[in-house]
Length: 336
Image (cartoon, rainbow, N blue to C red; front, side):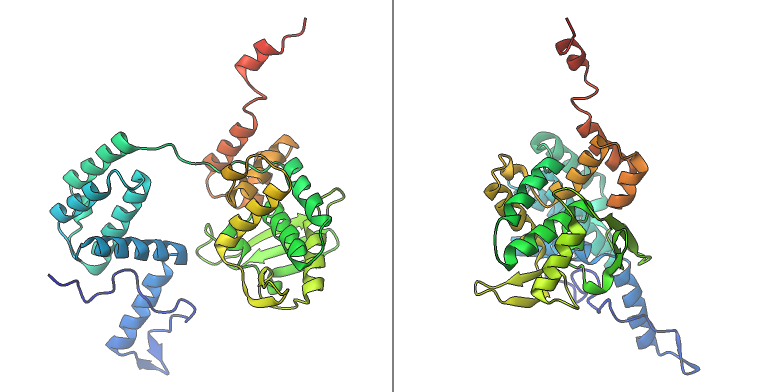
């Protein structure tokens, strides 16, 4: 059985092309033009990251030997083949991708069957694993990293200090951090304003605006960024770029994965003990945790992080208060 001639995932048409009007120069568009316009709209409805994730899931299914479209039995065999090997959350995500492929291409969705759903629930109950949470990078630990970098020479130290400070105080996702460009910056008397044209929680492109005030302590992300841009002579394009071993600054932005690498390397060099538990998400979690401890209110934290759901912010705050509002603590810290 051959795979469908349809694209294996969402449309491949470029997202940066505006969807043209149904009429051109007063003449009705052809069916082909309307079809292309429709494809652009469908593509724009899904984020780039989601499309890449789904595409990877489809390739994994086909590499296993699956063909598209598939039936319920094939999908169950696929789930059983990887029930032990893959994290159930990963398997569930791939099941969602396969479901979306069938729906998008107009085929019956085998993932919607009660048997497939029950099989997936059973796998989750038997092989479920605790969700790994990146440990929050507290402000005092970020200050250790920044102090260490300030003592070093070279462009890499300037870039990494600016990258980590902007990522932390702007509460940026790594995907947002590496796409920042000079044109998104606005320098003001009170600090730095950064406007993202689009983010994970702003798929409609209304823009996400973040203000980062000047600092008067160890950390000052605005100053760190200015020092890096001046030293690197960057006047346009990506803020954070690759630096070769010979000290040559590239033209393209860092890869998302580089944020994790830089954070881990600089944290280890600064002597932090929990590096294996870190990821780029430690910056966002750290901002929420440290801001709460410093007295910032809920709405301030939510706005700076651009979080869509209140529950996410409440979760970070609860973690920050784990030792503050603690029943055991009221017993262990009794005054004589």
